[in-house]
Image (cartoon, rainbow, N blue to C red; front, side):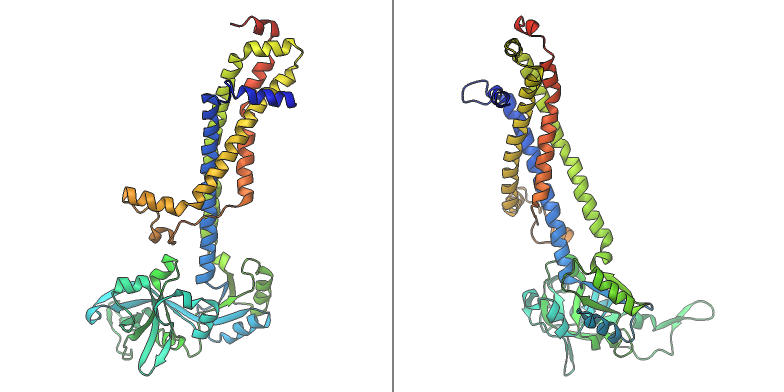
Length: 427
């Protein structure tokens, strides 16, 4: 076995201290394939992990919703959660229409109010790190109602700390009109006088998740209750938190059993379609990019077939000296194995380096090309995330070595079938 391995290494170096160009190209093919696989899998894993972290940061671990779309007495759900060791808070969420700008003449329909007690928000959200200007202050102070908007909103609405904006709810707007007996729209004479809610910006935040920052602003539950014409103390949902958001299903089963008709939805269930898409994309990228290594394996096959013809006389001498067919096969199989091992090791090192300096590479390419390669408005993050998983690296390296070894089987079988007498006469 050691002799076959020695000869396999020798055949990869036909000249003293020099690797053959053909063998070098085969190793480069494997190296690039492994590098690309490691980089892509690390980026896909990092994207998924970072997305989950951002989801947990900007969402509760689970939410409880009532059968009618809102919960008149959320204390029951809150008490059930706290009794079982979790934490919960009633919230009011809903899409709103925002008036902003000079004389409040501009409208923004892409806004969602998130109203919860400030103490609960500060307990579960790192508001200090989120705040970029002003302070995280909600509620009323005299005649002013304070809200915290995002940096995206501040830029889009061209307002800052101390400025005001108006908020309309769909419920109040639809109460202003009605259909008459003829099916035509007319003013609702029974509707009460309606004025929008005016908020003063107390602070500007950024959660680092662009889809959340683009639409969500924080307010006090009392202001949201009036805005949506909800009964006093009601909530649209109860948000809850558990010690481990990735292992909370047994805890949620207890809550479901106690609350009966209430829907208890984990953060994974709420984002199931998106998470499934990420997992499918990761697997598809692996199966598609493994073809790069497969092409390198075919290159090894061609290289070793050429090597068999070049070494025909040497193979004849080996067989004439008593070398078995199995030993000859092992020589060329070990050649494929060595190419796979060396190429996989080099590709792993290069892949780790690319991941280590990925953001520097992106910034350099962006400066040279003048194009933004990773726009946060599409990918939700400020930098390219990546996470190298040892199991993924082991799978990639193992698959590469196996493919390279299998690529050597045909030329090894061809070498073993050579007749020693014919091989010695080969010119």
